[in-house]
Image 1 (cartoon, rainbow, N blue to C red):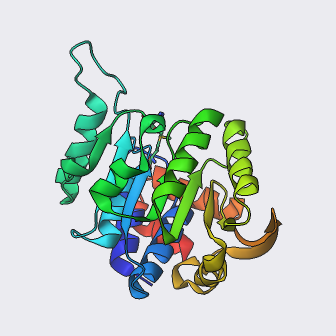
Image 2 (image 1 turned 30 degrees about the vertical axis):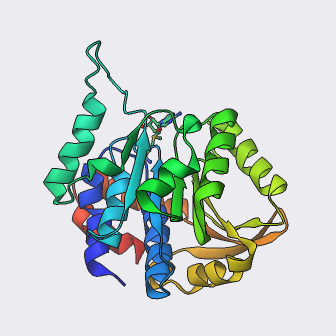
Image 3 (image 1 turned 90 degrees about the vertical axis):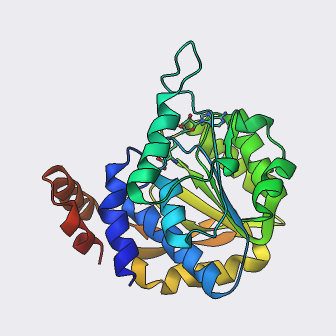
Amino acid sequence: MNSTTRKFIFHDLQTIEGYIDPPDALVFLSLLQSQNSKSLAGGIAEIGVFYGRSYYLFRKICGPEQKVVAIDLFDLGQTDDGASPQYGRFLDSGRRLGLAVDEELVIKGDSTRLSADEIRAKAGEIRFFSIDGGHMLPHVVADSQLAKDCLAPHGVIAFDDTFNPAWPEVTVGVADFLRENGSEFSAFCMTKYKTYVCRRDHHQLYYDVIAKAPDLTAFDHVETEFLGSKVARLHNPISRRMVYELMIRSGMSAFSERVYR
Ligand SMILES: C[S@@+](CC[C@H](N)C(=O)[O-])C[C@H]1O[C@@H](n2cnc3c(N)ncnc32)[C@H](O)[C@@H]1O
């Protein structure tokens, strides 16, 4: 197991407001480290940075040389003079964690208006693309097309909030993407919140990475069929989630990592 990165996930990352849950952070870690070990190179891109919780995880796992493109409207709480507290807080967290943001790789604006060339110009072909921006169907349609167009042959797309009843159009958008591109793409892993997709010719490789990852042994691996492919569904029982939440709320985040061993 990766003790330094696990400490970062279970302690430092919790100091940033955001949405990535430990199971998905451990999936990100397992996939990125397997790409590193197999020399499957490329940039990283995220649509929907918010305050940077997933972004700083990418930065921590992949080190200072890795190009991570950060795309967001960055308009939360924006005032009439255009100042955005969201962007300021995002940068502050980087300084605090010793992971300063390369602002050349930040794209402030609507992801649905971006072209794959703009992303490739910043980071080359993308090996890991996280989609967590707008949650309505037109956003998911545009963002998944964008990810597809700049993805490296061995690239992975992580779709957030799939199967979340609060965001039904994300589920429709991801299913549409897989059905329209089913000869090329398939899902290989699902968690409570995210669905992970790659090209079919890399499906077995990533399926096996998830099956064998030392950081994912805490979860039940349930083989599930989804639109013509075998998916490793990582089940995280409610009892574990409750213990974890109680530890976080009672200020024991430093020990919460043990719940996920
Ligand atoms: C759920 S939050 C992302 C959470 C984040 N990934 C994390 O790790 O905490 C969604 C973000 O998407 C951004 N967003 C919404 N619509 C967008 C769009 N059309 N283009 C770019 N960003 C968008 C919002 O500003 C917000 O910061």
